[in-house]
Length: 115
Length: 112
Image: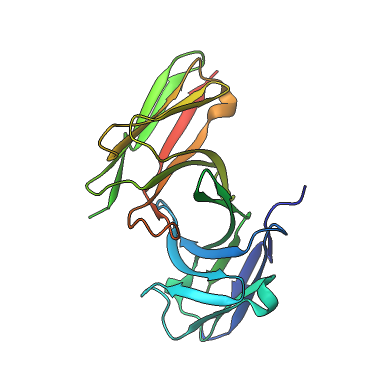
């Protein structure tokens, strides 16, 4: 049984560079979510997909951020012109329906450090 | 201000002791989820509650959702070092059955 996987697990980059993260959801899950978590805080919602359609984006997702889910399978999150404030753990989750509600299962996260 | 408040902020207990942590919202909790997180890792799903007055148990952990669906508690019986970690509550606060809003988490340490 494979869970949600994320790649890379760690990324160190210099300010101004672009970075891209990948998330592979649990195979039968049609919903995929991206969250961001900073130290001492809970995860904050960024965006989510149902199949290949991006259904909601948080105001936290500035125009430097873009997410895609081609063919409704894996997803990528790209950050352009990174800033030090982008340093955080980026978490991906996918969901299945349990008792009429979606339950989200999280991946191990990608920790981004912007120098 | 936080939409979901968790208390206490942190907790240190002696192995074998019982403990309770709380998650409170000013809005209706359409779905309330408890997760556990080890530092620097992803979230592990524990339990989901959705009906007022609902209670669920798994091994030594029991979660309850109050009748008004604005507060949840997580109780651990006979704590063990393996229970140590960060406990996060997440909730659907809109009824849309999609994004979750999380509290800041409670750090639990269990002394052998």
